[in-house]
Image (cartoon, rainbow, N blue to C red; front, side, top):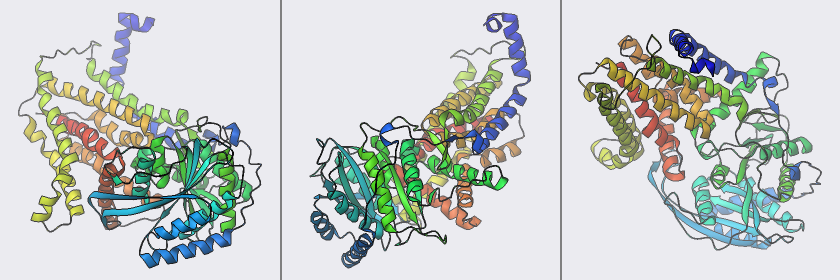
Length: 603
C-alpha cells in the first residue's frame, strides 16, 4: 500500500511500466500460450474421480441378455422406416406399447430461415415418439431420458433397436425410483428441440409443435445413443453442448468407470488414451485431443442431441459407437449392460449432479484440467490489454492523461464507434433479410446468397476508415485506442467466463493487434497483419486446424467450401437453437476489430 500511496514511488512504478510495457506484453503473450500448451502434459492435469457419493461404486450386477434380439428389432425398424420413407410412427407406438410403456407422440413443424444444403431441407415436418416407464417405488417426481435419433438411411437403426430392448428389460425390474423416458426423435436436433420445448412448456426458437400429452418427472440426466453397426470397436463420449456448455464431470466419470469395469474400449474426440505421456508422441496425442475439445466447444454448436438438454440444466451426453479397423470388438449385449449399469447408478441420485466440475478440459477420459488450471492462460493474455491501457493513460513522466467529455478527442471517436456497430448490425440482419432479392438478381441459391452477403458486408467494413472521418487529432486516436482496449477486455473476459475456448481463441488473434496497433506503424504491413488476424480469418484457420487434428486434412479448395458451410451452419444454429457465437462475432467482436482498423488509418 505504501508503494501506491507514496507519489514518488507511484511515479517510479508508472515510469517502469511505461518503459518496459512492450517487453512485458510480449512475455505475457508467450507465457499464456506456453501455459495453455502445458495443460496437456499429464503431471499438470488431475486424475478423474467420482465426486457424487451415490455413484461412487460400480458394484451393481448388469444382466441385460438381449443384444441379438435388439439387433433383430433394429433390422425390423429399418425395414419399416424404408417402407414408409421416414419415421415408422405407428410401428414404434405399437412396439413400445407391447413393452409395457405409456406411449405418446408429438408432431412438429419448423421452417428454416434459409435451406440447409448440408441436409437438403427447408420446411421440416416430423413426429417424435416417446414411451414412459413409470417408477414403481417412488412418487414419480424425477425422470431419466434415453434417446436415439431416427436418422436417414441406414444410420442409427441399431441404436433404436437397443433402446427398445432396454425398455423391455427395464420393464421387468422393480428397483427404479425415477421415471425412465425412451425417446425416438425425428430430424435430429430439430426434433429434440421441439420435444424439450414441449416438455418444459417453453418456445424460445419460434418452432411449431403440438403439446405433449404425457410427462414424467423433472429430468435429472439424459443419454443419447448413436449406433450404426452390429459390431462396435469402441464407444466415443461426446460432451460439447450448445454455447460451449458441458455436463457435470461426474457423468463422464461414470461412463469411464463402467467402460473400465465391463472392458469396453472407450475414446473421447475419437482418440484412445495413451500411457506414454512422458514421450513426445504421447504428449502430442494428449494435446491434439484437448485442442479438438477446445475447437468443438468454441464453435458453440451442439455436437449431439444431448447438447440441447444442457440449456435446461439437465446433465447429458452422447455415446457414439465406432466401427473401425481395430481388432477389439464389442457386441450389443455388452453395450446394453454398460447402459444398464449407468442408469442403475443414475437411479440412485438423491439430487442433481452438482458436486463435480462444470468447467473443464479433457486431454483423455482419465485426466482433466479444471477451471483453476486453464484460466491463468487466458489471464496472461487479458492482462496485456490492461498494460496497454496503462501505457496510454500515463505519459512519459508518470502523470495521468486526463480527458473531458467535451474535448475534441472524445467527440471525434463517436462517428467510428457508431458506424462500426451499425456495420455489425448489418452483418447480423441483412444476410437473411436480403436473400430473396439476391436470388432474384444473381444466379445463386438462398444459402449461397446468405453466405456471400455476409462475406460482402464483412469485407465492406474495410472501407470504413475512408468514410468515418476526414481529420483527426493525436488525442483522438489515443481516446479511440483506450475505448477499443477496454471494450475488448470486457468482451473477452465475459466470453471466457461462459465459453473459455471461444474467449481464448479470440484472445490469441485479437490481443496482439489491439496491443500494438497505432497510426504510426507501417500501413501496408500492419493492414496485412490485421486482416490475417481478423475474426473471419481466425475462423478459416480453425477449420483447417480442426481437419488436421481429426487426421482428415483437406485441400485449399475443400477447406474454403468447409469455411462457407461453417458460416451458413453458424447462422442456422443461431436461428434454430439459439447459439450465441454468430451474434457475438457480428454485433460485438467484429465492430471492436473495426475500431482497431480505424486506428490504423487515423488521419
